[in-house]
Amino acid sequence: MMTRLAIILVCVLPAFTSCGQNQQTNTNHEHTHAIPKSDKEWKERLTEQEYYVLRQKGTERAWTGEFVDYHGDGIFVCAGCGQELFDASTKFESGSGWPSFWDVIDPTKVKLVGDRSHGMVRDEVVCSRCNGHLGHVFNDGPKPTGLRYCINSVSLDVKE
Image (cartoon, rainbow, N blue to C red; front, side, top):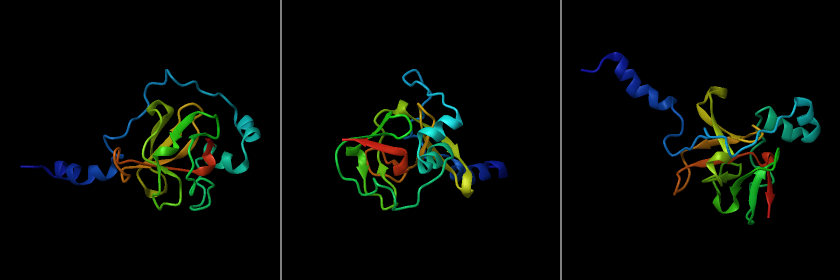
């Protein structure tokens, strides 16, 4: 017979877990090289909007980013440090108002960090090199991964 605690854990715990087993959290940083910059250096290097998103974990308004409707080829890189993150071939139309990708180029290029801000339980996507905030990942994306990396345009540049 299940105890009340066991029933609570079975019923409630899944709602507080992250996107699941499909995610690959970067725990091996041997392929990345951190970029140590002071807050002042980041402010000097980035635009006001880039700084807000990448360094202060902000979010650009939906449907305003330059890459929402991007349909070209190329590699999306971190606007903070230039690290390659997403191949344009993994971009898809999610209807969310932000560029969405179903996979990263290499799982060591991003870190997933639990985010309980704004009354939600999500996984924040962070550049593994400069620790810049990119967006969030959700488990409602297309096959083959089932993931939706919902990324701020301002945190990206594209190399065509």
